[in-house]
Length: 458
Image 1: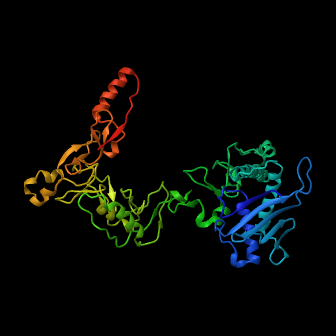
Image 2 (image 1 turned 120 degrees about the horizontal axis):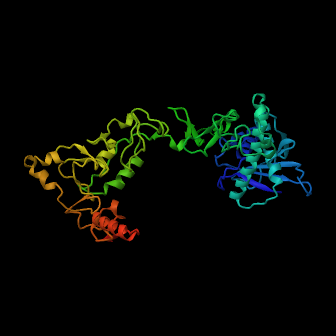
């Protein structure tokens, strides 16, 4: 008997089109006979469900399908707990050896009808696939053909648009709209079809939620509601449009009582401690949803540090953030204080700068900062203790001109492949400015491109 595993925590989910229908039947059966193990979600990870069918006799053409068979069991069990058939709609409780009719309701009848039709169409494809990826891909294509025919049939039943239907689409299960000839789109869950054109009358039969940025992410309303918080799509609270869940901004909540072991001035050892401190800290609130990437919510910010505790930060948590003088860089209070190189503060006036400000120099290796240009003009008024701690720049990157202090110049560094001039980590794959100029001149004369590269200099 051909059988496919549809739901299992032991196997990867490849989005079989019958997954939600099988889950609905399984949920009904467990609710009736084993409510303590009734699954709450399709990906709960406690159950195994298989779908198969038996053929009475082999003959040319379409086979007779006496019954579709579904087996349900807990993942801790080795044999089926319930065996379900669709004709008639009933199941056998294997432990008690009794047969129980499934009460007909709209949800179960619809799910059973879909499963019957799918299995019939799959059986006449005469293809046996052992690879679950290929099997699910074939299953989706078969079910999309069924849904395309259903879409054209729904349009034919609408008297208002019946005169403009292309009947050839109905006969061939065409993947194009029979009204406007646009492509059909399919729900990622049940594969129900609709027209992709918002201006076509068929686009509302049925209404599908579709991400504006990722056109392949589509869900119908029943699948959207059934998946709940696990749905791949959600509505932006600002513009009310559908978008991928991963594209909705979220604030993770400001960490509480961050306690770091201070490193020496210019030490990088604080970075792993910072990451660990963020991960272990309690938060002022649980994750708070923001808006989609096309919208902006007042007061929401993004920290310039790649190590920040949240990609986006809500107004409540952003209140202590720091912006540099040129307003190009903003950092949360914790990253501005502890993440090296995000905010550069003048040792004398303590004003915040960034690397784009071009108003202060810091060592690109240890991140010790010199006086800002305003304070440098008043160097005679600076305390001797402050002057003693200022970095002395003795080298710079041959490409971006980032400074290196006397303490760090002996550290390992990258070098230009052309002349061995020092390069900073950000420019390690480039030539220095002089070699770029010479390389460009040579390329123009020879009409060929020059190679670039970098070596590690110790």
